[in-house]
Image (tube, rainbow, N blue to C red; front, top):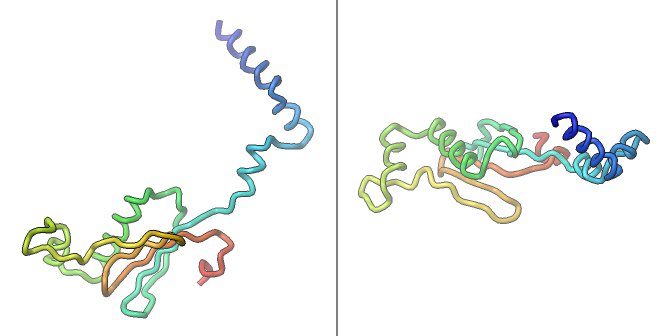
Length: 135
């Protein structure tokens, strides 16, 4: 029964023409489309006022939007917040101890996220051949 299923899958694969295209040195349309897509990265820059402290580059697919927002909060807290300020940033909004020091803002086109006041962290999506990425 397993052998019959394998043969049926192979017949379906041959029927769609993908095997013939691959044997002739051509690829299917899906493979052509995937190879032409540029690689995209999160370019993350940390600033103290206008001075660039460091710059990082990570693939876009490594993080969800929420994940990159949490990473920005962690990087901002690491660079310049005291423990009491970090606790205040995670307090409930309607409490007296709340401080909006780790709010992530941004979006739009181009997609840019920002966190913090000073120091602050900026993340934007760039393509592999982007000249801003080479800094």
